[in-house]
Length: 134
Image (cartoon, rainbow, N blue to C red; front, side, top):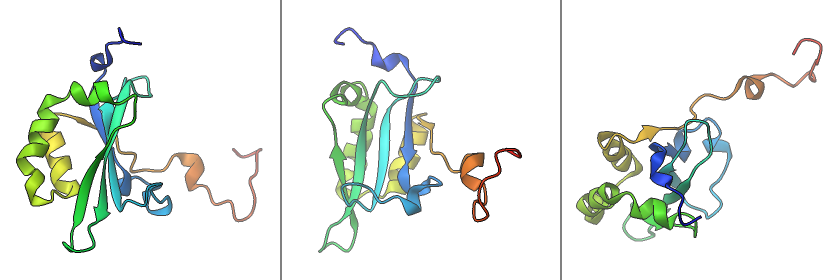
């Protein structure tokens, strides 16, 4: 695992609140919004990722970002010094998800946000599913 070159995959992100399923799927930690950021091979999956989650601060009347890294995401974070520099530059001003996304796009990260539901999710199943027509 230590020899894995995770940075060979394209850098990208997915913005939870902008996904087709986001409004109906609360974020597990109770965050108000979330960006998943990492390395995402074209064939799917990830070779390392971490998250920035936004929480209600309770007294700033603003969403406050929090970086969350699982044990398999540290190398991905270390391989993105330009992202750390971006966050350091805008971090003291309570950056919004929109500001971070704008920065990611400026750094040429790929937007992997699934804004449209797959065909099966758009089916009207109120009358049941007809396998003959599918």
